Length: 542
Image 1 (cartoon, one colour):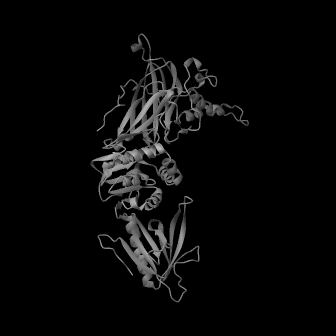
Image 2 (cartoon, rainbow, N blue to C red):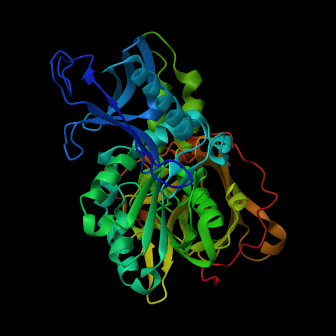
């Protein structure tokens, strides 16, 4: 029997076979050794955009075999017997393996028809692009593939395809609660609207949008988490009937209609890590109607110099291992300077006390509704601060916040020091050479962030202190310190004790003499230090 659904493209096809069994098991859906048997139905169809083959006897039965045609191959053993080899994911063990299925036919003509249908559906689903009930999946190398190296993407999607990492984010109640409040408090923006969830993960934001009355939600997720999202959404049928999960990259999938609103959680450490903001911008350009809403709407990176002697000494002391001159008869000191550079090149991720800040923060605004994708490839922030105390500066502290600019309520999600801690924490770039400042003294510099192919950024930080007192205008720069950091490789310090600032006369510096740490600067270009910084901490957006 063959069934075709009317329409421009075939949505479903059914054939009958005699028997289907697993190679590793003697069990089968039907036994061909019996004198009388019920034929097995083989149904080809698209399930949420994925070409699928399902074997069953009773369409209502849960005892069936499902095969993803994208990862399957069919081989003919003889005129009435074939074997199908496919890749199967074990979601409980977070791994995949090969599975062999034997398919027996009643006659050779039945075998030919099955092979023909298998090849046609596999070609239509994999080569030409999936005939989604809600869109199509493009093929070929995408923009994402052009700018992100394959090994990084593989690790990235593997990480976010695991439930334990999704749980870590869901249990960040500041994050999840703020998203829920921003959506539910702005029901007017969602009721009757089409929503695209960019990088849907577990599908939680899609479910929030459905709760707020969205007409339909397209949940786009490229990792294996899409399968879990389908399961979670199916388990909430009153909401799930208005949600479609699409497994694929935002840069590749096609949708049948434009979105009235985008919702996403594209923020990484320092807002920009993982480079998902670019995907969010691409989704805006591809899917959002003119003047459509984006949740979140804009983000701000906040920066301020800090003083934390404990942190500085902790990092410096890590390299003391390489000062050993007789380590099992080996002199390690030739690598000491390199070790120092390596340790100081790691941005520190932790939750610090806001009292370590020594000047009011400035901000750099990224408006998601108007920023171009290319603007995120390189971000340059001139720095200018005024010291509030006589103290030693150890580097630059950074955090971010995002705004949900709803029609009813404007809500901020912040990662600021002193606010409830999130899984993003805060970030500090520690300079190898501290700077000494007096109250009222001007601190200038530059924070230059350059995107790289490993889905992160290289950070170049320079801070300088100008002359102080009479004749300062002619004195120029007295001190300058620079360092290069890899945002991809931070030092996670969340379990360490928090440092509190001490008065300058209480600092003993007994653990290490910081004047003895000589590290060659990796960004000595201070020519742009005196640029006027953008005073945009309270910048307006449109």
